[in-house]
Image (cartoon, rainbow, N blue to C red; front, side):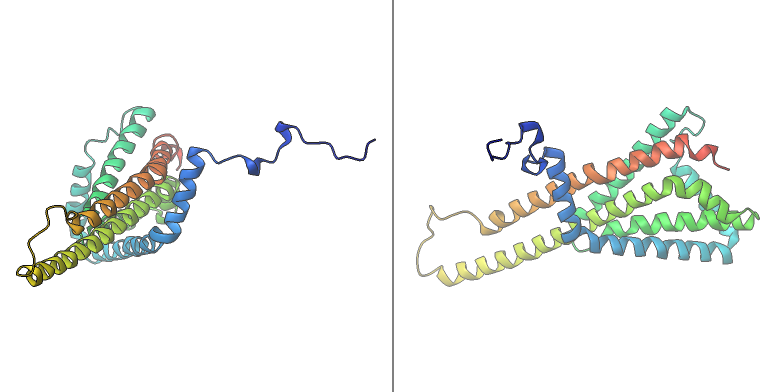
Length: 253
């Protein structure tokens, strides 16, 4: 015994000193993006889903004659899904179908100011309202139907829909801010050019358009954030939902 504390071996060193890996760092960034940007848009998306469900359910309850037409439209939209295929093929097809719809919803956010992605949860809620209304008119056990045929995969799928919508809303808001800032910068530049047109000739060595210098990094940052979030959150949720719907849901009665 020499009174000195033994030094820990490298294997016993605290894990806190280890730098985070790439995936861990990406999800840390995603958590910060959720807190700082997406969470408030997620709330709007959830309200849109609920509003769509209530509106769809009440509409078809009071006008049941429209159920057949609406159901035909839903079936037409899902015609490329082979319901009789093997579970792996069905799962991959469901994943592709839902991922494609989510990409479209997010891409709609590229249009500034209009917040078009909010229509996606509104439509999904209306479809759920339609299905519940049909089950009610056919005297089916609606609570059991929801618990066994919708919730198991719907928890993941609807979460993915809401998250994708929040990404699209974030993109639309960001593009709107970018467009407004670009318009103001262009207006200020024209005003400055008008004031200095008779004072001094233009300097060919002057820096480029301040609008371009502002908008390019902002647009790149928006797109990078949206793509990262879509890959890290939306796609995994849709994949889990697709496999549950193909392998688990058919066995629940």
